[in-house]
Image 1: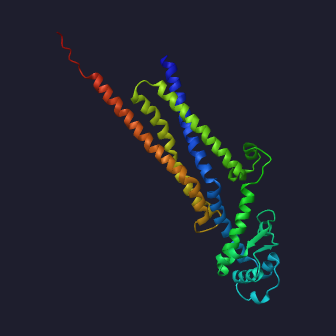
Image 2 (image 1 turned 90 degrees about the horizontal axis):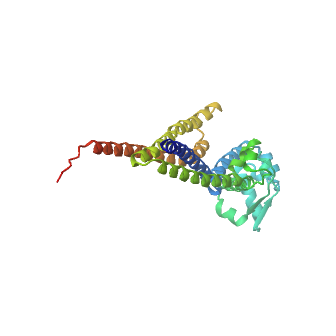
Image 3 (image 1 turned 180 degrees about the vertical axis):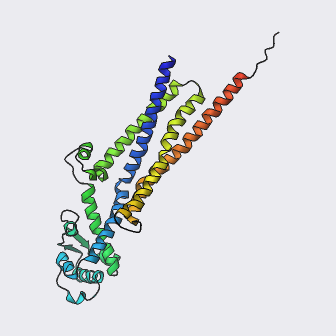
Length: 297
């Protein structure tokens, strides 16, 4: 019976540790791939790339891509101001303007998408060339993101990953999959915890049985911390960039910080349970060794 209970305890500890790590990882991933959070990160990065693209194209390319009536008098101004003035002129007396622009394809981000501008909203948010570019790139980035995030895949999540289509991990399908995995791992954590409780009779042993897997799982906090620094420092170096990439650092922080915070909590709780388990065992052993005085009547 003792051997069976020990086996249940070891198996329970493994299930508990594995499920706990899986739950933390899946939950952190599902939080990052939540529509609002990943959209914010995606648009920030995409806007920077689009703005850099606009800075690099020629004035002739701007007119060719936007396909607006020639406005040579505006081309003597800087590019953002030229676009701002051209759009103001096009919006004159109109509520909406559809620009026949290859939004995604023109900037190298996939298939063409229509770009419809609310003129009233544009005038309210764009007051200069710089703010106009920020406004336009925001609309473009949001259109590209929605098309990307809600893309219909002809395969299941695992099938897509096996095919090498890793972008599915950042889609609505990937977010749904990670939410389901979080629930599954939560159930597994509960099953492992129940196996630990029923396999040990003393609370000191139970506390240690919970403490060890939690402490070992929590130690991965330091591994992920090193890995995070390697990503943010080495990737720019490999690309030949001397300074850290702000956008990359922000995304890495958004992905890893929730996971690291959870692992740190697990580590602290695990150490506390271990300490509590050994303290309980110490006092129970001490109390069992104390001589008892039996009074005979």
